[in-house]
Image 1 (cartoon, rainbow, N blue to C red):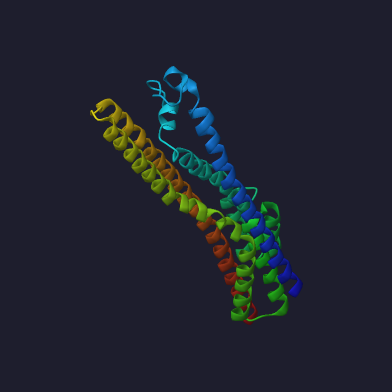
Image 2: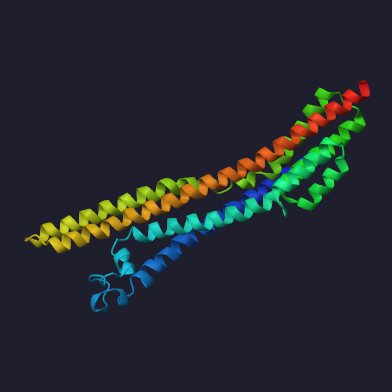
Length: 279
């Protein structure tokens, strides 16, 4: 039992280290790629009058307009890339946790087998399905066979099976929450970075207007337009992050509920089994 516990701890630590490494590399890579896009794609001379990115962007050229948003733009692009990267990563991790087949069909089959007392059949379903949900349910089913063999009473069996489910879940499920904090943080960072870029752009626009002497409505309008690009980019990043966070949170809740539901069915089945013995 001690060896199993040590193995669980080792697996958790290994997964945590690998996840932290991926998170760090992904953040740095997204910022680096964003800087390259801003500088060499958006800042390409072909997007501006006279082929010079220090001048005005060509009419209708959005790449040049976004480039003129200032040095906050690559940060915003980096945040947007992070949302995309971590959303894709979470999608694959959660899909793998659900298993190889339909989770709904798997749960119906497992529930049916457990209710009928066909524990071996339910274990076979778990072996076919694989994934974190199936692994946690399988651990509870194996514990069911053990307590049945030992002849535990209903309450002792319920406690033992529930503890096994919690241990299996703590081993299998933590990676589902990994990087969800990053996505939720990007919701706020996107908006704040966009507002910062807008304020900086407005300061620059009005500062240039003040030093030019005569009011230049065209230059002022252009400066304000460039500043507001940061707000639009920031809001877009936050909106995408909110959608991704809520979507994956819902998926994780569904997986957790499936494990709890199966655990309740296992305990109920064992109680019926003990009741039949007394009868």
